[in-house]
Length: 454
Image 1 (cartoon, rainbow, N blue to C red):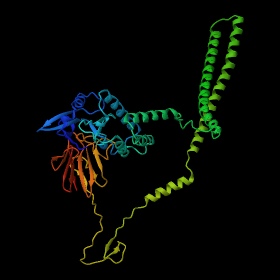
Image 2 (image 1 turned 60 degrees about the vertical axis):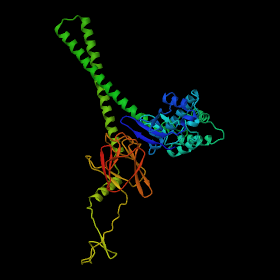
Image 3 (image 1 turned 180 degrees about the horizontal axis):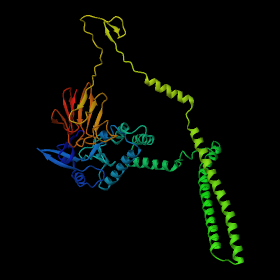
């Protein structure tokens, strides 16, 4: 369906010409529904009359056509499901207002999606019964679906097959596809994490037994150190007890029973303190030896082999060798180099072999760092939305998906994609979605960034 784009200061529109006999087709009710934004996912539009001509203005502000949005980064499974879900919700809402599905324009260039979300908007044209068919639209989607996404590919191929069946209704086809996909998700087994995905016969229990003692040995070592320090602390306390008892015996007169009791306390405290001191010292020394042995084993595990060291030395020696640069030239189809004994002399001019770059290239001239854009591989989409464009130009004046270069035979055409700040050729702002041929020497301005075409 033929339409053109128009953008004012705040809004973007898709304009469609209306036939002269539009009023005779009894479509005023459908137009009122569209103007009232009563149907979900249908683009709001308004009928405008300019110089005795009627036009439908569809508001597509902050939206991009499906063919431009997914020209670089294709649709994945989630986005395909969002598209089908929006079509389903739209058709259910249309049935409430007695709108037929034959009025929907199913074309990649007439289906729009939000830049910040996966919400889709569709154009409804009430003045024609010859709109594109849904089955053709499904086949057109094959170009914009990521073929590496298996679930998305299976979904879209199933949609193409069902839509081609005789008497197939769009709503019934989509509901069947969504229902079938939900059933497949329920039947799929829960994914097993690779860490636990193993067969019982292939599992090596010896590795597990070898790994556990490593962690256990560290805990055991820390416990031994803590136990040794505790025992030494107790030996100090027993020594203090002995010192207190001796102080009492030397400064006070004790009875015979108290004298025997004090001697027993001193004897028991002394023996216990010596045993605790020896045990604590031994435990700390043992833990220290285990730590040193573990460090030696760890160093051996990460030690380089002699063969690897030899390779590393040869690698360094290889790059220490100075680089020798040689050149050669041809005269009369004979090649000469600086080592050649015979070098041609005379007044002949030597023709240098050089490969001319036939592809045009854009060079920026008002940025801090020169940006070079080669037009070798076309189509080429330019913008600042990473992952959705071929070339990123990081500037605030550049839209997320700004413009596109396409090949038209041997010529290159530039097309603005409804950008906010516009695309200019030699100072003239380009109309959205219109192809303009460029040549060497032209000045291309993308937002505020100026490029020289060479």
